[in-house]
Image (cartoon, rainbow, N blue to C red; front, side, top):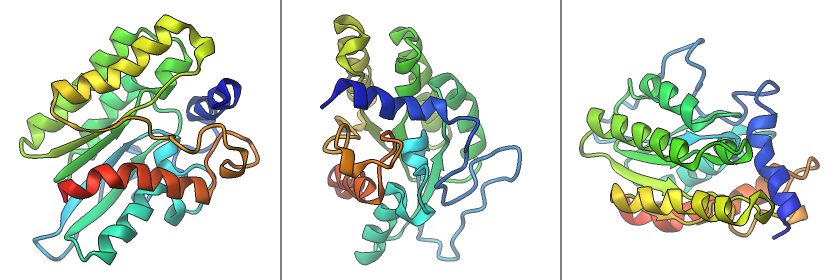
Length: 226
């Protein structure tokens, strides 16, 4: 993978924070505008919360093209009793996510998919700080819903961030997944990062086709939990 292209792709998670903070959401994830409203009249239907950055929000695409929505289609095709909530927000850092998660936990969730931390890496924030913030998010989810099933989506930094930092950053996700007994997706952007035809014209956000690959990367780990 081209380290330059990957760096550019990940930069979008932070660089477009002011441009579009709600792109690609299935339910509105801006706490200042509305409370979560995803419900289902069937008592058996349970919520799956995807919590992350612009990669989860599906920046630049129709909401139906973001990978959480694509996973909803897979769920529906199998007639499984789950409803997807897209809690992706462009520019999200682990520290911001630690604050925002409380609002999203106002609705019950059965499965929690965590995709967060890339913006921390691009800013060169302390790996320890990122790990601490992500653990805080995990702890809040577990405290509110003790029986929740959890999935961790891993992220990586390009080599030009430095060998030690890159290795330490990558390890954060696998370490937290193991510590908290979470299902682990090693690298959300596997097969997409650095592939021009799978990214939008800006070269940093996945196209609709790219999002399909992200959906497959997550689905092959998530499906067994449903």
